Length: 153
Image (cartoon, rainbow, N blue to C red; front, side):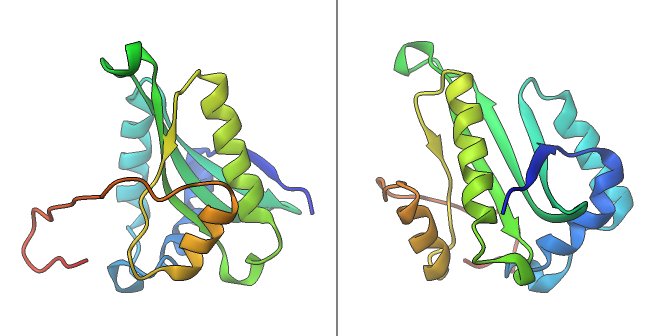
């Protein structure tokens, strides 16, 4: 099944926010719309950091963010960071996530990135298998330090 993937518009946020509650983080809570709108506008001010939405038959069924960043290393070639990939529960297992990641990979190649990377919570085995089936390799170690009390991995 073919989907439409495009840069999200501010008017899409209301349909996208419930998807983030399905990622298994933040106890299922999502940002209030007004805060999401503020962040969306801030993301748009970055040179190449965009939020994308995935539509099927006119409904928003998925979302992801893609940051293309410049680097001093790697002879100045940019790299891409794929973040907050989510497909609505009722739409999973139908190839939509595969199309979304393929879109992000193609966009990263267009921007001449030397790599695209992502992180995934260590407990999300299904997500790990999904990414590995798309050709992603476990690479090195991921380190994180929460800067707020009470946060846990």
